[in-house]
Image (cartoon, rainbow, N blue to C red; front, top):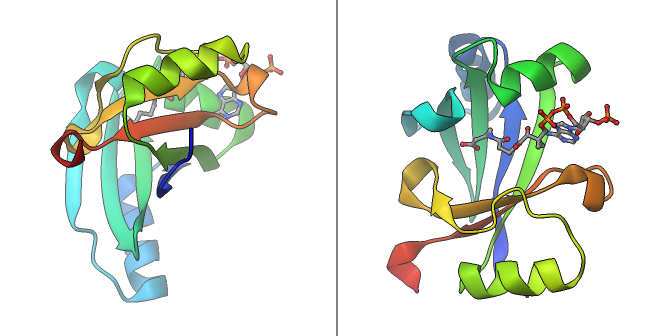
Length: 137
Ligand code: CMX
């Protein structure tokens, strides 16, 4: 599996509005999309930095995994997402390497991407996401 690029870096924040202002002020760029991912109980905001995005993640609920993360570790980098092609095939290959999959099958994530997470306990402590753009298969 060779990722084509870092698709995005997910950053957990307590307050989306003030985090958006911080990035807009720091880089002079505009947040181009805000989206609620209901099944993950997060509200997201996106910035483009070249081929990569910054995804701000605000929990919508106290039992959201992002809320648990903030409670335990505080705000900060939550996950790194790698762009890949043929996600389903690559998940099977990752599992053969004895890396624990959180998602055994691709599912829909923000921006209509097909996504799957790998467990941080088997990736050296980094929550990794693999993303496939269904329009670039
Ligand atoms: N990065 C690194 N380690 C993490 C982590 C993260 N983001 N989240 C949890 N962990 C670690 C914890 O610190 C804990 O380690 P210790 O046992 O050493 O304390 C361990 O993983 C278990 O953590 P937990 O708090 O008990 O949390 P859960 O097991 O309930 O869930 C995880 C952890 C990764 C399986 C869960 O957060 C998950 O399924 N994540 C994938 C989905 C997701 O993150 N969705 C939000 C983003 C959605 C989007 O981008 O749109």
